[in-house]
Image (cartoon, rainbow, N blue to C red; front, side, top):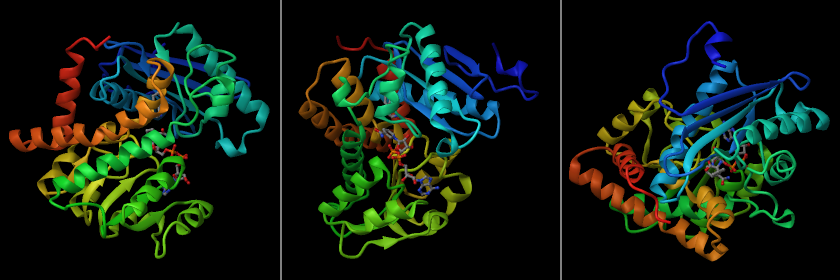
Length: 359
Ligand code: NAI
Ligand code: PHE
C-alpha cells in the first residue's frame, strides 16, 4: 500500500527499504512501520504513540525517525539496522480508554509480527515497558519489557549517561574545562531529561529547566539549591551555555538556529533539528552541536546490548559513557575537514554502513 493512494499530496521520495501501514478500524489507530535499512542487521527503533494532523505526517515522522535510527546504531557500532514505528492515535493517549489502547497495541503487535523480525520495536514517546509487555503477547519482536517480565527494563538511565557524556565532549570542544558553573538548560524532564538534570547538577552545573507538565518541573526544582524555571515557549530565547532538548524533536528550525543564545546544543530528543540546514547555520555561528543520533544512543545500546548481545548493565553503561570519545572523534574530524559536526557524524555512519558489523 502506498500513502499516495490515501492522500492527495504525494510524499517525497525516500530511500528506505519499506513502509508498511495498517489501520485498526475499531480503535481508529494507524500503525505505520518504516524500515530504513537492514544492511547491518534487523532494523530497530521504538514505537511512538501520539496524534498527528494527517496520516501523511505520521508516515513522514516514522521515516525521518527511522533514518536517524540507522545512523544511531551504525555510529554506536551495533550490528543492527534502523527503523521506527508510529501509532497515529485518534485522540491523545491519556484520553483513550484502556480497551481502545490495548486494541491498538494488539494491532500494532500483529503488524510487527507480519514482518518476521525485519523490524524490532521498543519504547519511545507514548510507550513504555508495560506496553512492551503487552506488545510481546502479539509479537516476538519487542525489546524493553519490564525486568520482572524478562526484559531489560527502562533504557532511560543509559540514555542519560550517554547524553551527559556528550555534554562533556561538547563542552571540551567549546574550550571549557568542565561542567562546573555552566548554565545547562534541560527541556523536557521525563525519564531521560530528569536524570540528565540530576547528573549535570552532580557535576556542578547551574540548572535551568522547562517542561509543559508542572509536576515534572517540581520534581526537577528539588534537585539543587537554585534551579531556574524557564517557560516552555521561552526555551530557545533563554541564554545558556548548554541546551539539552529532551522533549519532542523539531525544536530548532532555521529561524531559531540564527538566534539561539546558547553556545552548545546536545540532543537528547531525536531529530532536534527541524531542518537539516539548521546544522550549518549553527556551525557558522560557532555553536557546538552534538548530533542527537550520537548523543542519545545510550537507549539503543541498552536495549540491543542487554537483549541481543548479552551485555551486563555495567557493560551497557560503559558503552554509553564511551559516547564522549566517539563525539570527540567526530568533532576532531569536523574540524580537520572544515565541515559541521552533523555532517561528520553522518559520514561516520556511512563508513560504518559500508563495513560488516563485528560479530
Ligand atoms: P518522556 O515521555 O518520559 O519525557 C518527555 C518529557 O517532555 C515529559 O516530561 C513531557 O511533559 C515533556 N514535554 C513534552 N512537550 C514539551 C514541550 N513542548 N516543552 C517542554 N517539555 C515538554 O520521554 P523520555 O523517555 O524522557 O524521552 C525524551 C526524548 O528523548 C524523546 O524525544 C525520546 O524519543 C528521546 N529518546 C529517548 C530515549 C530513551 O531511552 N528513553 C533514547 C533516545 C532518545
Ligand atoms: N526510542 C529510543 C531511541 O530512539 C530507544 C530505542 C532504541 C527503542 C532502539 C527501540 C530500539 O533510541
